[in-house]
Amino acid sequence: MSATQRTQRERARKRLEEQRRIAELRQRSQGRDALLAKLPKVDRDRDRDHNPDSGRKRKFLLGLLMLPLCLLALLTFLDLLFTETVKGEFWKSEGFWFFGSGCVCWLCMGWLRREPGLMYVFAHEMTHAIAVRLSGGRVHDMHVGPDGGFVDTDKTNTLITLSPYLVPFYTGVVFAIFGLLSLLMDMDREWILPWFGEGLRLKGVWVFYFMVGLTWCFHLTFTMQVLQTEQSDLLHNGEFFSMMLIIFINIVILVVLFIAASPKVGWSDVYEDLRGLFGWMWRMVF
Image 1 (tube, rainbow, N blue to C red):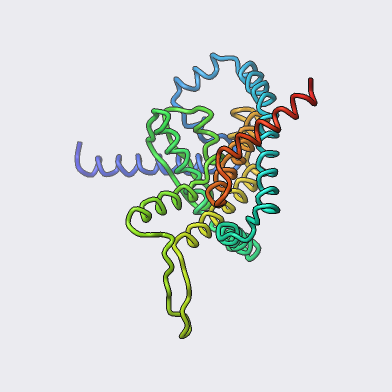
Image 2 (image 1 turned 30 degrees about the vertical axis):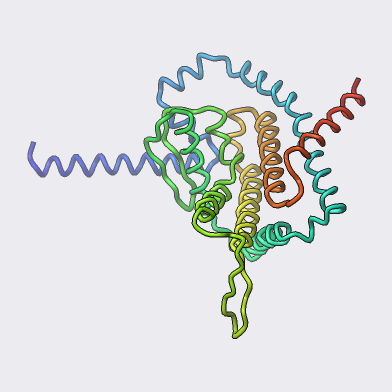
């Protein structure tokens, strides 16, 4: 084969590959399940061998079992928040104000139409890819663009398909950076920065609280938007079960953030609150 023929064949192969990617992006934008569409044929055949209706029924029953857990988690968080805010004056703490400032900053950015959609697509697909690796799968390709993205992998499960809705990717990045910086410097140390001739007080932990609030609110708002417009990941696992799992995990994450920000609340308080609420619910039912 001549060099010219090899060049022409390579160009034809690249054109076919580009056409395939464009078709995949169009499927993604139409709300189809891009992750399932990219599974190898053997995996799709294996999915057909199993009864999808029975799988949905099992996950619906799991969703029903998770419903009281979601209620318990929500009531626990609200009770801890109310008790700590009213009795413990949590609203006066640094964590409350800077976390809240980060949330307000992100909401203002959304109101001003300054929402970085490409950043969310990257976080969404990267979380898929990390979940694939944690599940023992392989990532063959990943695409991120303004119109959507996809991850080409050889494995799928509930963790992989729902991970972007469960895990605030950038909040995890903020925690990782804060953990590394804490090994190198005192994040509670107060720095005086020049600002219009006067000193501006700043602590590293203030920046941490602010960025956690901003990134968590980023995750929450985009998750709510995506769930309203594109529910293919939820359909794959059953909408009811998926929503129960998403709600439960996000409440648990919120409780963890609350404990990290509150100087007085610990896991022992969560346990005591859960035990009291569980006993109350048990007496109400039985």
